[in-house]
Image (cartoon, rainbow over all chains, first blue to last red; front, side, top):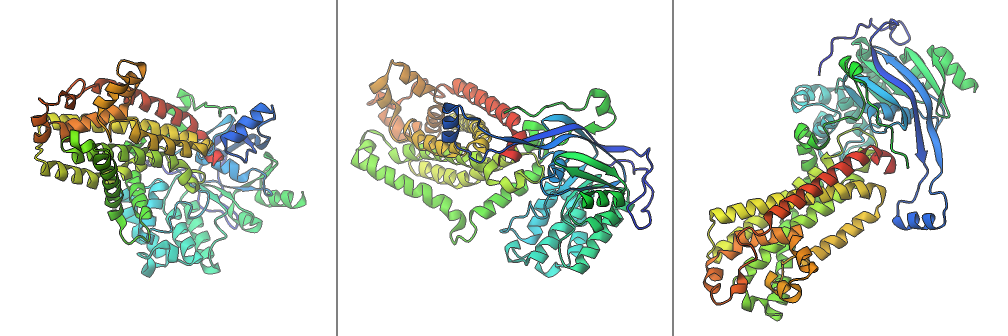
Amino acid sequence: MTLPPPDAPGPGGGAGPVVPAAAREMVRIQHVSKRFSLRHDHSLKQLVFSALQRKKLADTFMALDDVDLTVRAGETVGLIGFNGSGKSTLLKTISGVLFPDEGRVMLRGRVAGLIEVGAGFHPDLSGRENVYLNGAILGMSRQQIDERFDDILAFSEIEQFIDTDVKYYSSGMFLRLAFSVAVHTDPDIFLVDEILSVGDEPFQAKCLERIRELQAAGRTMVVVSHELDMLERLCSRIVVLRGGRIVFDGDPVQAVRTLRES
Amino acid sequence: MTRPAVRGPSRAERAEGWRAPGTDAGWLNPVTERFLLRLLVKKELRVRYRGSVLGMVWSYVKPAVQFVVFYIALGVFLQLSKDTPAYAVYLFSGIVVVNLFGEVFGNATRSITGNAPLVSKIYLPSQLFPWSSMIVALVHFLPQLVVLVVGALLFGWRPSPTSLVAFGLGMVILLVFTMGLGLLGAALNAAFRDVENFVDLIVMVATWLSPVLYRIAMVQEAIGGTVLWWLYQLNPLTIVVELFHVAFWRYGPRVVEKVPADPTLTQPGEPFGLWWAGLLIAAATFVVGTVVFERSKRRFAQEL
């Protein structure tokens, strides 16, 4: 699926791209709540016993509580907050892995969710096979992978090991290949969870550069990270989450200050 | 537990290009996502035999051992082969059915829990997991089928239109029925891990509750005319096993020449028996399995 190029300008100075307020909406999150049940035991015995004892089967907690968020084309929105604030849950509801209990999420265009680098990689397959498998999982067709295979390989810089089983890779090589596949999927909306902290410094710089390129190409991004300084430089807007609620949504510098002060 | 609210974009919003995340082609996914399905099958085949010297040969060894044990214990010791001509063919054509049933049902049931890292982190159509389990099972079924055909040919059997129709019907009923059970098992197993053990139990019992090892005439003699006899006959596996017998055994020369002397060698409702009942039950099972799977797939990620 190809969409008309979003009407976003190039990257702004030091911070993320400047996006006009009238740009096309890409993600619309309306009154989304998500409750998790803390059910640790998955056995029928447990279920029967708790039914007999009239005990409440599971405690629940609100991972997301009435969240409203709109992301426009070309924006890079950061999600920050302490552990358990609901950042990853929010990202997963956008990607379609989790479904909200209340409210709704809507999207436009193709989404690629990098919830975790290399989640689709299998250690017993070669690097080449993993590129194809992971590319397909992230929504690429065979033709697209064929076309981009050389770019993916060049970006990862592990050419001579591409036909080796991934289980023999060092963790750095593994991350390089996984990230390389991910950034070559070329979706309209990019969901990124804590993956910019991978690899050594030169590779990190390369990843950031690639993200900048995607920004310049008008891609929409939602990024979760604990690296506040990096996000502050990268994002056009940052959303602060606390206890499943949005407590701040706006200027990156101010957002980071809000989080640090709390 | 409350079911997640299912409220997609309205028609006007859809016209503007909006869609809800995680929506896919439902039960048609295996067709629309053929490329991904093929890669998942390749992965599963590769992973199954990692670090094993014999590799695919194991899919010959297991049924071979099973066959020899059953043949000696039942055919020779219990003397079933005396009254059943070409008992080896009879036995093996049932064994391949039950093996395919067991592998599809068992693996499909474990397919969601077995792919937990993928299911809980990246969105992809989850139907593909049980379907790839089925295709992997078919890949393992193929060599067994070849052995069966060669064995039957050695006993003088020759393919005929009747045998082809019986085989085709049997395969369709078996796959549709088992896939329905597999989808159901996969969905339930994501919530309760007990299900996979229960499925193993069913698979174990299945060998004995369909005419794989003994002849259906013996069952009729023992419980004929009762409700149990009807239930036994309506068991889709019974129907499929009988269809396989028609395909590979019943019209072999050794059986045909003994039929006048022993009319119990004929099967009820020859040649295709209760195939329509089998198809109906299989289709109903598939619908139930698909509906349950579709309704529960939204919760897979949080239940794993």
